[in-house]
Length: 324
Image (cartoon, rainbow, N blue to C red; front, side, top):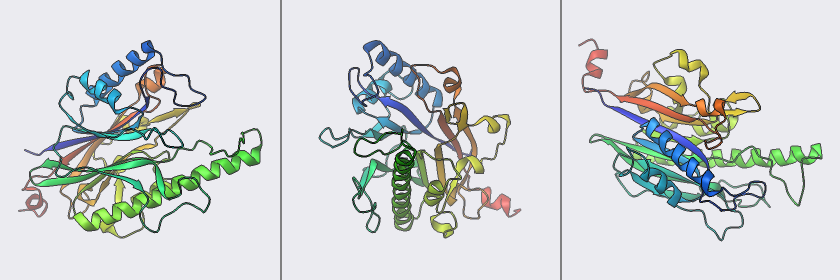
């Protein structure tokens, strides 16, 4: 019997305790709003029913633990995460991993860029990710360890300086450029980390999270390693899926001003690209949970969730391909 592994990514949108001030233009959640959000998030986690979920926009790991406690299927799941540094200049959310699969080694947090990657001189936090990256080695089966990396790259929100606003078109354009440069630098740093991971471990890799850009964007292509050597490349699970059903055309994770797009991705290494000779599995299907975006539920996230079903080949797969 072939084994299936389910990976998901879930940007929960500002998961925080009631009364916590997150941004100047966002009022803190009331107790009633908090209860509604936790309840909805718990239901959505159960609906995903994934073996491993990568989370983004966690302002409090304790609140995520409260969410898990209210689920039916994740009360005993492994939770890997860390709270943002309250002493930092800017209070930013963090990422987390929730897994029903055991880990092969302690998880690793990457806060700083690898050597040789840096933002332009004078940039804030020039040597580090806006939201640190988490890496965990997961035991998908007794014979298969998967390196899972959860990311949240810099958003497209303009990076204003010195009290600038969007009223001046030039200042707005320069602020957008600063955000793009940071997201691009983070993508390059992530590509270096993933290349090192591929060389060190030589095993399957899954990278998932909020990339704040579509699959065909230059920044995403950098993470994929498009055009580079096959051994370190990644592939968009959505483009690899074997089932191209009627849902494929309505897959999106973001709905902004009436425009639907996908900025939350699940990327896999060549071991899960069924078209390649050394594949040990294949992406069967990628699903998008996004009805709440259309319904504009106030307690829901502003992102859709992405779920990838990966089927591991059994021992007879190679023999079948060879016609034996």
